[in-house]
Length: 253
Image (cartoon, rainbow, N blue to C red; front, side, top):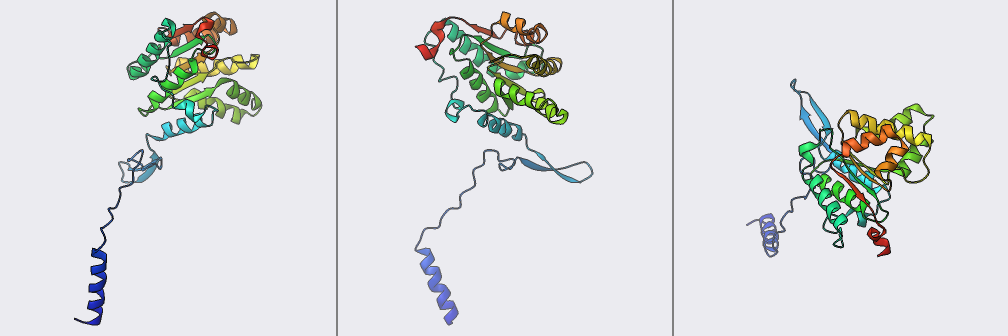
């Protein structure tokens, strides 16, 4: 045996003393794109292109919700964490929310494809709306979160810049599902009427779902603007949950 062979033999002997480390397969949330958000595909002519993976919209939805001001802890609250306190109104609200999420794909493209939680402050409207979002996004159904007061303020600030104004509106108009949280919270102006009408009317005309939480009552929505309010009511018909009574305010419990 040559000197080189002897050296290699000793090295192999030392290596065999130690267990071989198993190579771990990377764990991806989306194996299809390996969490890049992009996939390659080939057209009929053999040209290769890159396009967004189907998981991309959901990732954007999560990112947008993270930037919305809703804490990560609150985002994790699902239906199981919603405490009905054995109150019939809250039991019904939870049931409606679960059924809406469960059967969403059956009615997504129909006229009555939306849901609204309205009324009493502190009754868990945002919790249920967020739980629906979590359920839908868990099935790769993208939801755009719109904190009404913050979004309306931002949109009004860019109204004189037509390109930016249009881009801000399109975000909410074109989303597969739009969750409007705390609708009409704060002081309402003529601009609010115009902004909300553009968003709601587009979605109404194209059968695009809304999830709405608001302290307004049904009458309050119609008083705000009958054209906009009546469209939202029609879209949510069968899934309008009005919560009434200070006893529902968990902050006072």
